[in-house]
Every structure is written in C-alpha cells, then in structure tokens.
Image (cartoon, rainbow, N blue to C red):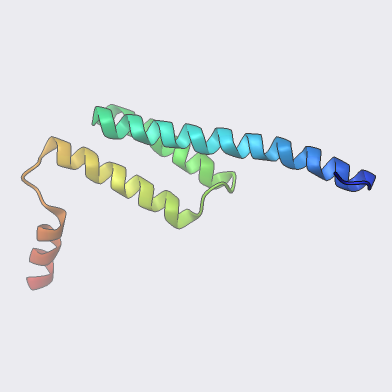
Length: 96
C-alpha cells in the first residue's frame, strides 16, 4: 500500500479509470458479438457507433476500429450472399 497521499489518490483514480475502460470494451465486445450472431444489417450502424465511440475515447486504436468495422461488414455481406468470396473478387480485379 502506498504511503504518499498523491499515490493513494492515483490508486483510487486508476481503479475508476479501469472500471470505465472495462465497461466500454466489454460493451464493444458484446455489441460486435451480437451483430455477428444475428447477422442483421440493421444492427450494423449501432455497432459502428460503439466502435467509433471507443476509438474517440482512446480505448482502441484507429486501425483496430477500422478492422472491426470491416470484418463486421464482411460477415454481414457473407451472410446475405454466401456465393461472393472477397478474395476471389480481389484477385479478379488484380488480374484485370
């Protein structure tokens, strides 16, 4: 246990920040999991909002936010049209 008053205050502050961070990240994971399981395009904007919010608060990196949004959109598109393979489309564009 810390003896210095400022360190004691910092410990209290860190506990509060940890709870906030945990809430945001847990909520983010839950929302993305629900979108993946429901495969509902109507829930995608809400997930995007949560991802952007986590990025704006500094909880996740910009590239991670973009990667999450991309993968969610890909999962939704695959559920809608399973015949479309994104890697095959990319290869066709490359070869053209």
